[in-house]
Amino acid sequence: MTTETVLRAVGVTKRFGDLPVLRGIDLTVTAGEVVCLMGPSGSGKSTFLRCVNQLERPDGGYLEVRSELLGWKRRGDTLRELSHREIARQRRGIGMVFQRFNLFPHLTVLQNVTEAPVRTRALPRAEAERTARELLERVGLAEKGNAYPGQLSGGQQQRVAIARSLATRPFLMLFDEPTSALDPELVGEVLAVMRTLAEQGMTMIVVTHEAGFARDVADRIVFMDGGVIVEEGPPARLLSAPSHPRTKDFLARVTAAHGGPPVPSTETARTPDTVDTADTADTAEKGQR
Image (cartoon, rainbow, N blue to C red; front, side):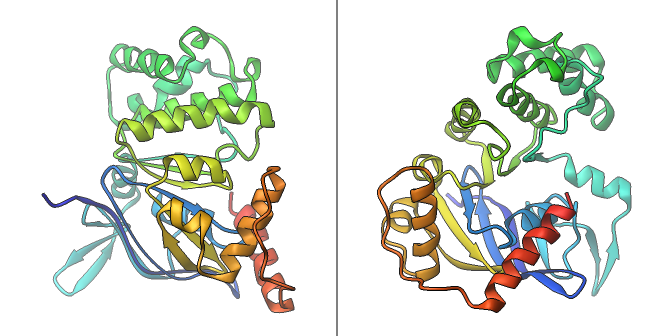
């Protein structure tokens, strides 16, 4: 049985001004696969997700989702740029959860989850509310439907954001460091929801520094640095015996930051060019959010 290809990226490049952030990304993700993108700040991980969801347009290469070219339509040997309406249609199948929760503060939790399917899928409001209540129960917030975002903890708000993304019935979920804005004690509740989604077969691409989550949940880890994929592989191999020195040094820092046993580092110092590129790329990525 052939596994469906959900996402295919071919030679994807992206620049912000004179700064190259993506330098030719080739990546294929199949149905039901969980791929974790790891790497230092400024390596292009978030920019890549934003290109997949068409919040940024690649400067080169192309992306296909379920064999459909993103942002363009082929007509013989020529390409036609899609309209905003056509891009919105493509986005409906892709859910995205950001670092910040981006909930509407003036709407209740139930209204936050209901709004997208009503507006983008023309779902009757009663049906959308019924689905929203089911999703809130799924993320452990069934009793919070009438609360406002400001009345919730950060972890609860992020779980609402996940429910909101699921409300449009996506076949691909993108997570951009979904726990980075949370207090440490709230991280577990969000990761638990993501683990459940993975167990239920959701195709997911997750930008994360949570090595434990990646080890337990991911089918594959892709390590990025300087806008390129440095190496990739199954978690058991990549986390315990990475082949590239840059991967080893990054994992050593991540492990030390989370209080785990140190991983031997092979890097003595980063070159000035590497420091400038990573730091500036990080600023460029954050400025686009």
